[in-house]
Structure formats: C-alpha cells, structure tokens
Image (tube, rainbow, N blue to C red; front, side, top):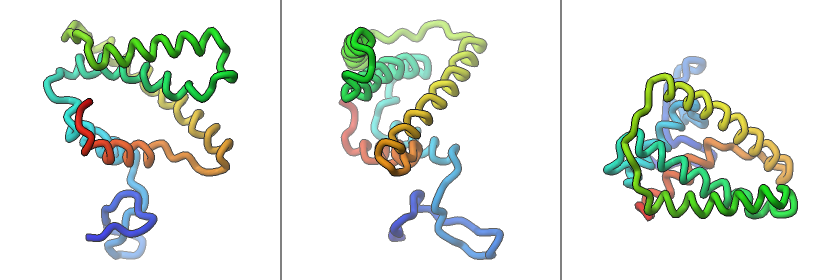
Length: 159
C-alpha cells in the first residue's frame, strides 16, 4: 500500500469510534520503540554482541552522540565542560569501533538501576527537544525523528 502524506506509521488499524479501518497517524510510544529496535537489528548493529556487550557499546555511542550534539553549543556550554565533552566523544567513537567489549557481570538490581537512569535520560532528551522546538518555532518529535533516522540508516549498514 502507498504511504499517505502525514501518516507517520504507514500502518492501518480499526477505529472503534467510526467502525472503519483507517490510517494510524501516530503509533503508541512502545510501537515506535520497537520499530527503532528492529531497524537497528536489520542494520546489523546487534550482530555478534550479547545484550550486555551491546549495552556497553551504546554507552560509547552515546558519548559520541553527545559530543556531536554539543558541537554547535560552543560558547553556550561552559568552555571547560565543552572541552571534556569533545574528549569523551572522541574516546566513545574510538571505543565503539575498536573497543574490547567484555560480557561481564550485570546483576538484576544493576539492570534495574540502569533502566531507571534510562528513564532519567529520556526526560532530559524530551526537555532538549522542547528547547529546540522553541528555538526553531516548530515541534521536535523525538520518536518520529528517531524512527525515521533508524529506518533510513538500515541501508548504511554497520560502520
């Protein structure tokens, strides 16, 4: 089926209000998250890594992305902090590509603590999106942007 303009999901569903099958313009958060997970899997980034190794590599990737995010903020972020972010971003990129990732110990309590920190990070990301939206005078939909980025990156494969 042809994807219609303005349809984020490209999916169809039953509308209990009108009793018809309609375009699903917005998918629930959990469905969008699964689309991102699937795209990353299809790209090959999960291949050969245990969940713990993959999680560790994502820490390195997050450092790289933080540096890229911060790059235009020179003069906004305090100079010393900006310099440190650049350094850890370079380290993150190198380790993501060349690190020796162990499949070390991670208890259930540790995993739960990490999950809570993920929630905290998501709050920070939402606030950043709100600030960017204000600066650009437009909505900055994190999940829509992330789905589009992840699905478009499938063809790039693993770097």
